[in-house]
Length: 460
Image (tube, rainbow, N blue to C red):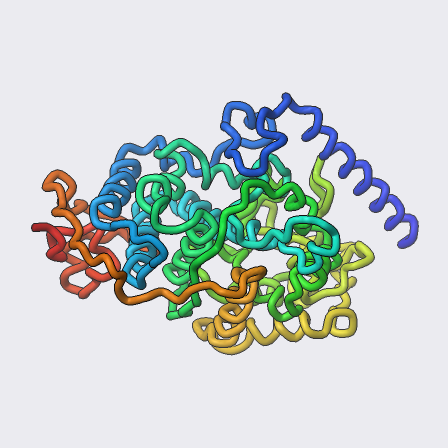
């Protein structure tokens, strides 16, 4: 019975896979299909994907907040050739924190934060350490992703030519384009987002000096599909040259944001509430261990994913997540934690085998990162720092440290009076409504001076 069931499951997966790619390929012709460096316009991609982050362009208050942050940065920062200062990075970090706080919809905020990290990750995950032997481009953090690839679906919600809909790109175009490369900006932005979203200091390294690539034709085929740990091993271990511990640590970024049916085909967040999807911590690993995950088959999607709880729980894990701790390589139907209600009588007494023998390093890393008190992220953060530095610097041997000052120390121009106004209210990184009186009383000007420039003394 089990053999027949697995045969049927394999056949259905093959048919679903074929249908998924047929639907994608047979869509309207894409004018950007030969370019990995152009951002697809939304009009020509609505048959493949919709648009998240609607509040960024449709809510007037949100648009005003984000535009004012970009205008303030444009006023205050100056380009210095061959030099990036600690202050420049810190201004970027504070700007992105202000942008995130200005997005009042918590779901959209999670998409914004997770999307920036995903953009940088999909840029560096196409690195191939043996590319020269294959006469291919090496890839890595080179400011180039193929926005037409199904693996990158949804990234044009972060990087598009609509200033209101894509403020991250608008910030680069208006402020940072003459300060750093696109590749550096993506890494710096993701680094800043993670530092802002972490509940305790994570202190990620950032070096600069990356070069932008004009094309990345080999990139789509190198990105891991959500099929299982074979894909993780091929991308992170075999091509990028990282360790299993590095791979498990980098996967922890799934705690930010969520998946969507219209992009990956896998709807749901990796953590249990929208509020948690804007916090960068070890909850991803605790969710893997503590929940009774069971496989879910989706229509017109190549690979199943995993869910727990009731039908409206709106959470999920990918095969590439679950396989880090459990041996699901043969596509078996099982429940990861039968001590709890698996919501499936057929699976309640079929626990998933652990991966301690097939992937011992990954198995151990999940347990190590999840261990200890909920607020203690030390083990995860230490591993993430190591993995992030390795992944974002692949292919580079002479990146530069940030400096305190550049040779050109001209003072920035004065702030236009029209831009120097406190917000009446805003949301902090955890979604709570705050005002500038609270900022002053709690001494939070270092974080919220964008929202409260008058209160914090940033206006002349």
